[in-house]
Length: 168
Image 1 (spheres, rainbow, N blue to C red):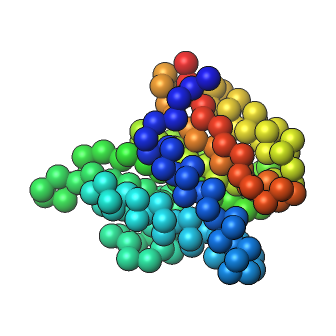
Image 2 (image 1 turned 135 degrees about the vertical axis):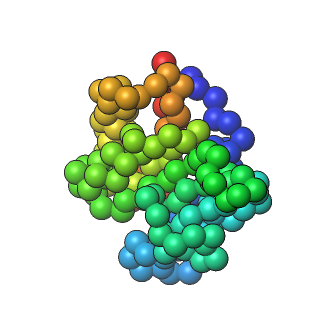
């Protein structure tokens, strides 16, 4: 079993609050979920002094970019030194929709790759995670120690399932 690092633990903690917040505030549709997740993860990145890019988020450092959320470290000249985190959210239940967003993460060169999606049940989520893990091993340009944090929202239980996959 792989160990979650400090950033992954903080992201999991954030995501665990979202279902209760959604119920309390009576959110309708995926948009408020996505906005809250993006804003909270961007805020976490800002705390760690990352420049962040957040598609359709509040107070973003740059406009929409390649991923739903990206954390960047810049040098004094504002050149990108590295990317610490990339994140994609997909609230459609169809595997093809989830895979289309996940495929962007396969190309990412970042320490943390986060895929947030929804499923009809725990079994559905675990099946999607299994398929996505297979995609990482099939991708020729994957490298040892590439990290993927999967967060699948279980519609039937109003909770997230998490799994960390680190390529051997």
